[in-house]
Image 1: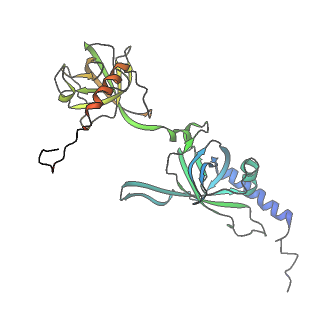
Image 2: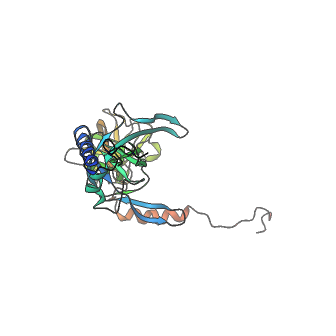
Image 3: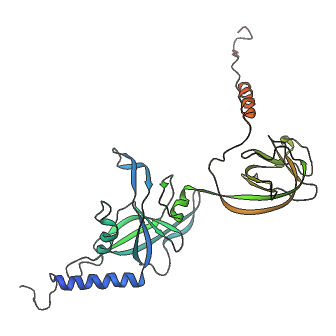
Length: 305
């Protein structure tokens, strides 16, 4: 028996367009603006079908509706074999027509793609798309108007970010706790602390050697005008502040009394450009020749060879 044409709107384009317009309006009203980052393959392994190295250079702003409004889904924060892991997940709804207007017409994408990223400016989160359900809800009036995106918190794996947006591009930067040390009277002003050199403190001893050090660190910034020394990669024992406590540079020999210490969270360059004179490099080249012993002895020859 044929369906009743007066009540069946499965093939009615006006009714389908109405539902689509209402869906887009609802997402624009109750959703949030996010950034869609398509993944670009730099070196794709054709055998295994995966990317050895990928990058993200483009962003597209689009509105999406957060399905899990009461919080993140997934396993949350768990203590795994190798430490604490955050396994937050989200479900997002995006209108098909809006996705084609904002992304699909500019990229060779027919739908949201697994492996692409979604950036939440609200909480500075990056989520990676794991699965895209294209039949939910199931054929309203004979047509699907939305995609249901299932995404998990992104795990950085040396991907390259050059989007021009501060949030995603911070993935390329290494954050590390560092100390901003305030120094006062110079015991030996010398040439000043070199960038990249090791500084150390021997508890209560001035003019000490590195072998007497109780704390060490690496210089990432030195400002003489404010007597501020920024140090990272600090050993387990923190620098001690006091009237008899000093800090000394291994290469420069510069030594100051240490009067203040502030813990800060900053972006530390992966490779600090060192300004240590080349003479020290030549010294290292000479000393490295004594590290390996190429003299040959046969322990089984009783000294004959």
